Each structure stands twice: as structure tokens, then as C-alpha cells.
Length: 464
Ligand code: F0G
Image (cartoon, rainbow, N blue to C red; front, side, top):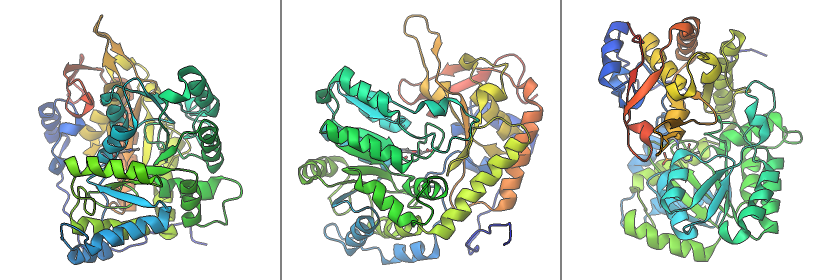
């Protein structure tokens, strides 16, 4: 067999990348307040800020866009969307939203009261914010194996099932409206959840009479990693594995901007008719009529097609292999990262990468800025800037459990030579790591501060 796994597509339309120099990027970084979210994308050469909505749609999806029917009610595009999701996931009620967080807001809007507690393997930041906005608590229960970033443990996205039992004992089932499993576990390093773990979590939910919901935005990648890593699944198809996981759950939220490979879109799904009725009421208030939600007919078409393409095994083989390729090369050169690699991103371990910068001084921010400066590669910190906050009494930063830098790989967008370039850029920053400066925050918002914060380097400039 050949060792190269080729991109299973060819390129029909190209988008120009604007080349910049390190000198230009010095000024651009300062203008952006040393926050990669504030850079203009034209000033970025390889954009690994997110894998969300940044994938390349297929010719079929673009053809679907032309077929989109924009009727206010009862559009055939809605029925194709609903059928496609039902076929892959098996959930009866499917409610379109403009993206994942709108689905979260509606789900928690109808299920969650003040003082409630929602356990999850790890909440994504918008999921957490939507729960906290309801006055409830978002409880992260990652498995203990996640703490060892370099071990070979294959399912570091798992939930700690004993901790889930303890949560039920501590808060009481009355305060826990539902349990969520995020597949793959994005905030926990894009690591997969095993079917065995999902089954155990579902069993605990059944025992306490509570529904299990999936945050399913990367369920196809999770399924492919199960096929590769979990005993008994090698011969099963990704479709069967996705379905088996959905069968354990009452419903899901989904940002279709990930594994359904669309630029915009999401949905809520459930088997519970009464809940769906309540959700549709909220949907009408802020998203739209139930047969389009927050989307246009053409978006529904692209999503319906992307949902099928996202579970294609040739595509997933290329996708997971490509992510692993980057991770393996970096690891072989000593770069500390979360291992084994998951589906959608490489997560550098900023605590070990820039060990001389304390978490309060944002080592992940420092690395992300250096990657941009060195090679025009845009990544994002997932650490204290994202999850910490200033202590109201002392003003000191409470620090995050992990300091990571995520290099998220858009779907079907970059080729292997782009990935080779990314490897070279990371290795250059790794070689020069001793000179990375710490950062302090000079401006921040109360919620989701990482999107808009302005920062400054402490001491020497990162880009002098
Ligand atoms: N859940 C998970 C696990 C996510 O990764 C995201 C988005 C969402 C929910 C929210 O979906 O953006 O469509 O509203 N993650 C993106 C990222 C933004 O970069 O990881 P959304």
C-alpha cells in the first residue's frame, strides 16, 4: 500500500492567500492588541483559528444552494434537511438554528432553571456561557486520564463516570435537568469519547431518570476515532457508530459548521415531543419559523448534503490522518502537545512549551502571537485568557486547568504542503521559545473576554 493518504478531492475554485513579512506582522499584531481574534483574516496566511464554518463546501453543496427553496413555511429544503439528519442520527424532532450556540440557548432556555447544575465532559465556552446566563452551573467532569497530556490513552475525551454519580449525590437529581456529552471534547483537547463511556454515562442518566444530550458538532470525527481505537468497532461503519451513539441519547445540539461542513448552520434535535414544542416557541421568538429557524432555504440544502459528506469514510480517513500527520511530526521534534491527536486540531501544551511564563502571564497567548509573527499562522489560546477571570477581591487572575494553544484545521481547505509549512513554523517558535514574553490584559469584557480583550507583552516585545 502507498503511505500517502491523498486529499480525496480536487480543487475547482481557489482563494488567494496574501503573503506578508514578519516586519508587517509586527505592526499588525500591535494593532490587533496582541489578540489573534482581532487580526483581519486577509492578514493571515494559514488560518487555524477555528475549524468552525471555515471548511470548503463541495460542488454538490453549492449545487444544493441553487436548489434552495426560500418559502417561509414548509419549504422542501427543510424536509430534505430534516430527512438527512433523521437518517444519520435518528432523532425525531429537528429544529434548525443559525448555529450551535442558538441551539444551546434554546435547549437551556427550556430545560434549565436558576441554581441548576449541568454536567458535561467539558463545556465549550458558549455552552458554559449559555448555562451560566440562566443562573445555573456548568460542571466539567473530564476523565482523570486527560491530565496526562502525553500518554497514549485513546479516549481522553471521556467523562468521569464516578464524578457524575457524585454530582447526582451532591446536588440531587432535581437540580440536574440533563447531562451532556461533547463529542469530541473540544475544550478538553478535541479528544474522542469512547462508546463504552457514552454507554456508562447513559446508564447513570437512566438510573436517575435524566436525559442525555450530545453536543454533536464533531460526532463524525469522534465515530471515526472509535472505529480506529475502540475494540469491536473496526468492522463497523462510521454511520453505524454515529447512530449507536445517538441511540444512547435523548437528543443533541449541533453546530453544523463542523462535521456537516457548512459555513453557517446548526440545529437542535430531540425525541421528546413536549420539549420540541417548547423549543419551537423560543425558536420563533428569536430565530424564525420552525421550517427555517435561523437559516435560509439554501443553507438547509447545504447542511442536508454536508451531513452526509461528513460521515464519508474516505473523507474522514484523510481528515484524521492529516491532523495526526501534523501532531506526529511536532511530537517527534519534541514539541509538547496533547497526545494522541484528536480529529479537528492540534493542541500545544503551552505550560510545557513556554515553561518560563506563569499561567497568569498567558503562555498560550504568547505562543499564538509568536506563531503569527513567525509565519502568519493564526491559532488561538485555550487557557487562562479563555477560561480564567480576575478575582473580584484581589484582581489576580484565577487560572485555567490547562494552558493550550489550538491549531484548528478547517475541513477540506488546506493541502499537505500547507500542513508542512505549519509544522515548520511551530518548530521555529519552539526553537526560539526561551525568548517568548508573558502578556497582561489591558482591556476585557465580562463574558467571553478572549474574543475582544486587548493585551500587551511584558518586558521585551515579542516581535522586536
Ligand atoms: N459546542 C462545541 C463543542 C463547539 O466547539 C462549538 C463551537 C459550539 C458548541 C458552538 O457552536 O459556533 O456554531 O455557535 N466551536 C467553535 C470553535 C467556535 O472554534 O471551536 P457555534
